[in-house]
Image 1 (cartoon, rainbow, N blue to C red):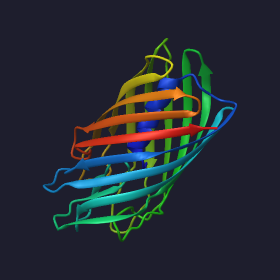
Image 2: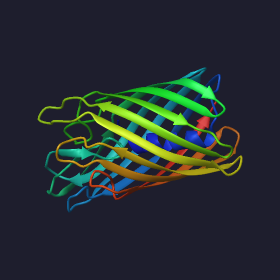
Image 3: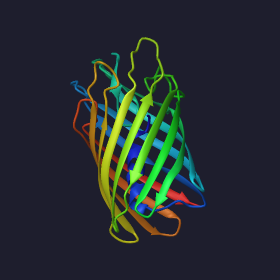
Length: 257
C-alpha cells in the first residue's frame, strides 16, 4: 500500500505507546518523509512525501484518512519495475532526471481491535488507496488498490515486541503486470520514560513485478512526548534490496484532541 514507510513508522510508534485504545479521540498528523535510492540502476531517484493524516479512534475502531503531497526527482522514461517505501512507482528510466510534484494517492483505512488484553493486542486493518496521483507525471498508477493487515503487540513491561502481516491487491494499470504482494514486519519498542520511547523494525514485502526483487528494510525510530497533546517522531530507514531506497529519513508531528 502507499505510504508504507510512513505507516510502518506510525505502527512502531503505536507499539511504543501501548496499550492505548481511547474511547473517542481525534488526532491530526503531518511531517516530511525523504528517500533516495538507485533501485538497481545507475541514476538516483529522490522522493519527498508530505502526508496529512486525520485519525479518529472510537471504542474498538480506528478510522484514518491520509492526503499526501509528493515531489519526485527521477530519471525519465522506462517502465514500472517496483515501488518505493511510500508506494510510488519506480521506473527503470535512464533519461535526464526530471522533477514532478502534486497530489499523491489518497488512502483511507479502518482498524478494528480484535483482542485487547494486558499481554496481547491484535488489530485488523482494511485499506483503500485511491488512484488520485497523476499518471502523466509519474506520481501514481491511476488505479485503486486494496489492502489488508493484521498487527499483534505483546506488552512486556517497558518492552513491546510486535509482528505484522499484510496483503495488497493492486489495480491493473494499462501496460503493466502488477502482482499481489505479501508483507511481513517484526520489531521491538521500548518505553524509556513517560516522554521518550524508541525501537526498531524489520520490514519485508514480496516483489511487485516480475522485474523487481523483494523489499527489505530496517527502520529505527524515536518518539518524544513533551506533555499535553503533542507527540513527535523521527525515524531512519535503511534498504537492503534493489526495491528499497538506499536510505530514508522522516519526521512526524501529531496533535491529539
